[in-house]
Image (cartoon, rainbow, N blue to C red; front, side, top):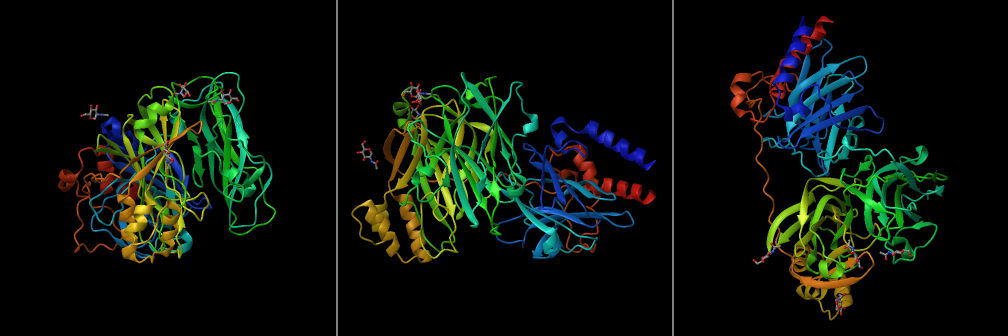
Length: 618
Ligand SMILES: *[C@@H]1O[C@H](CO)[C@@H](O)[C@H](O)[C@H]1NC(C)=O
Ligand SMILES: *[C@@H]1O[C@H](CO)[C@@H](O)[C@H](O)[C@H]1NC(C)=O
Ligand SMILES: *[C@@H]1O[C@H](CO)[C@@H](O)[C@H](O)[C@H]1NC(C)=O
Ligand SMILES: *[C@@H]1O[C@H](CO)[C@@H](O)[C@H](O)[C@H]1NC(C)=O
């Protein structure tokens, strides 16, 4: 009887739900999934409605106790949000929106912003499915943004809500990803080619960057690469940290063998145009249906540099690795050839970051007015569809901003909580057009509280980088466009003598890096004239100059009021043992109008009640 009622309710809500809310229905397929812990105990599925700004999570944990899912940050668990729920031994369900007041204590939020869709427990799993707005109006909820999100998951062996270090996990995930490979077209005549190391003995050092140069397949006519997939070997899987594939220009003479990418032989860092990136926790990447990397024509790259970053934290000896990237290509040509435009701060020691900096911003300017002249043919407007961000360990945030005729048009891409360990290609929610003449500014945000010495720009991990790769079509010959400030001006602003760039760089070592001087240097670097270096794929180089424009922050969108209504402080229900208030009528005005009916009805405790009824009768 209760089952029939549940079925009817589901049917009713499924029919009533507006079509764009399909992703958010209680039974619909959630497109994305990931394990959140190394032992594969916690499995997360998720999906979102980008327009309605609602995300749905389904957390499945091998436990009969409580489960929790939320968002935290890089520095502290305190203040993290955590939506918790579970099924009591008597079959009753509890569910609530909470936050961490210290490392292991939870407190219920005054505003309940998570909408329960389903909470079940069987012999193996507890499964909790709920939705929440990207941005609620509750200061205790962290926003879901297109930044890297540090997803916090926790569970307990029973229904006592207490965090325990061994059952609490944080994983960086790019939640708002735009394309799911399953939804994309797979050509019939796919050919596979592996770009991999062969029996590489992983050094016993903590960190190794191994590089080798590999040919792309030789094909007699034009083909398109349309997909990349990590190819990991069981034994070394936990040691492969990230993999980058760079396209080589024709002009370079490449070394043979495998060597340290950024070590004694600088030839092993040749080829700087990233075409795909994979990092721990990532999956495969497939290009949008209308884009591919062209191979087989004289204009195409013939070689790539494969860079594998190993983390051998336990210093294990004798581990051989043959990891790499599997690429899929086809003769069924797509509409566009993909191109890569590298933006940012020119990678060399004029880029400096002071030590002990809570925050230090660097800027690299690109002016596209010379693109036409350097390209050797007219440059059609560039349509950007994806990007990859790159700094080393001190990087905290990056963004690329576009200007036309002196006016800021938009932020093309940004990540305010960059994670070095999650360097992956990301698709933009819409295509961004860049016209010749536009200016593009990259801003990189660093933190060096743990460093005693200056950090300089350079390829090694002890150096820093500030790069954004834009993936676009139709392809042109420009490969990079990067800026750097007048270091002599900066030195003078810091009260140092300098008559050339070398002296300017050296002078930075004489500065006493107090917080005031750090701010002063940041300001001087921003106000200094920028030299913009533009390169083509054939390594033709030209330069121009410009000034760093102001960045007007994009205002954050409005927050979504909770549809559950405010829980007043005098509410005496014990934290965590109470479903969201069943105040359906009173709260309807506060419900965002785009919220599908299903989520609305099911979120109001109706389902918990139904499920509880069902279970107590089993
Ligand atoms: C690259 O080299 C190949 C073989 O040497 C040549 O045929 C091709 O024209 C070159 N491509 C460019 C863009 O210079
Ligand atoms: C910039 O402004 C000038 C003069 O108003 C105009 O001719 C030109 O088309 C503008 N450029 C772009 C890219 O809009
Ligand atoms: C690249 O440059 C060559 C001349 O060096 C030109 O013929 C070709 O059209 C350019 N390619 C594109 C895509 O603009
Ligand atoms: C910029 O270009 C000019 C003219 O081609 C050249 O003399 C100068 O050395 C270049 N400057 C830099 C910093 O590359």
